[in-house]
Image 1 (cartoon, rainbow, N blue to C red):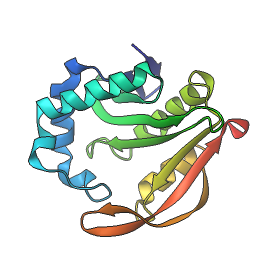
Image 2: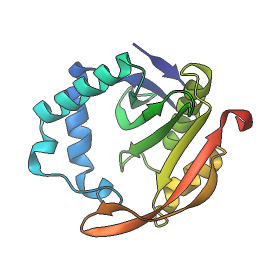
Image 3: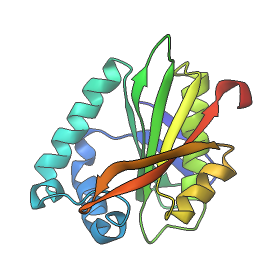
Image 4: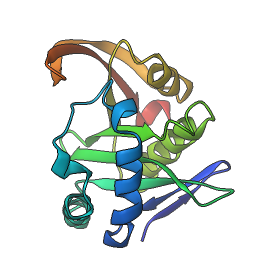
Length: 181
């Protein structure tokens, strides 16, 4: 079990026992999150599907290719989001991507920023990565603010990178290097 503790939140690797509360989080934020993420079919919002996704993530973690954390409020221990370090490549790249989603009720309270700080520290100090990258929609002002507050630099624009809700959408590439951490 990996636990990363911060002031406003803590991160814990999601386990199969979290499938119910994670499904509730995903379902509660279905409309909120699909503004910037692809829509999913109904089976995605079920406990068996989320349990399987967690199981796959745990398998990936054993190979040091992915780490999927729940974001928990430090005061209430309520699950308020998720953050993943994924698509990890070892040398010669030594890099990985980060992606995160915060519950609409907890948005704007600094949880995303603190979670990204904790995962970035983990990526450099524990996972041994040299580079952490993130894609973000130019329309997602809140997420851009999180990335920039945590010292990620905008490196460019990937035109029509992701197919989201029937439209090919541009995304900025942000990154932080171990040297700048």
